[in-house]
Length: 358
Image (cartoon, rainbow, N blue to C red; front, side, top):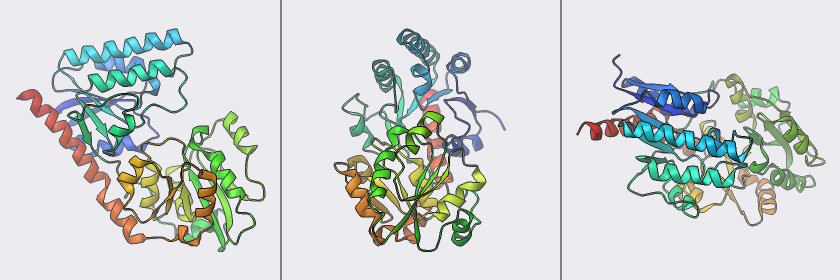
């Protein structure tokens, strides 16, 4: 197939399926997606891009947050801007996907904010997954509405194996029929509010609900020690502290009764879409931008961010929280299927090319 244009994707983390899902239709139309993860790789590849090509920037963490010192971080920011500016001067278009208003756990705050403001200004297109992301970013930087394109996060329909029955999935991790599997799935980091979830579960041990805390995802040694020290007393824990292989994803999602995302800050969440793919209710923070995007979904429950421990505990103590609306989750996953969403992204690339050739 003839290459119609090159798209530099940065950073393209190999263990994050989102990048591959987004690019499905674009590859089918002849776009050559070049995946890079390091600043040095971005500099090298960007130097070869010209009119018709695209620099698509995703997570900003690798630019300045990889630096040990402020001086090194500042130098890396200068290098990044130089590479992107030079590609744009040769006619390449710049797309920025806003995954977070700012990355979590930053150590070079001012430089990170300068980077985000630079991208908001320099990008030809700012891709957001929910319309209210513009308002969520407004306290820190301004996104020009004329540049903003909304393309939702895709579901994971058809991406992971889905062969286990619920009975077999629960048996594989030792869950009894009358136990409620309360799942946190994904990378375990302090900013994700696990202490809040643990505290909420600690309040349930004397209730009729028999909660079992399910933890599955990678965690650093330091964070694991921190989390182990605050696990809820009297609550059984089933913990897989490591990468979850694709073949095992269904085991955790099928076995659980509810997925809880107790995040303190969240703009988008692929785990939410993963839960819908496996017909699993979700507990989310009641943030305005999330409510605007997903308020009509009957399989989502909302906790009060002003009193999260009490609110999550109340939800987990309510049998209605665990009710499954299979028709609604199927509709959501079909509506946001990988093919549908990747087609919208490919259409965006086509529009950029058409503008260049006009």
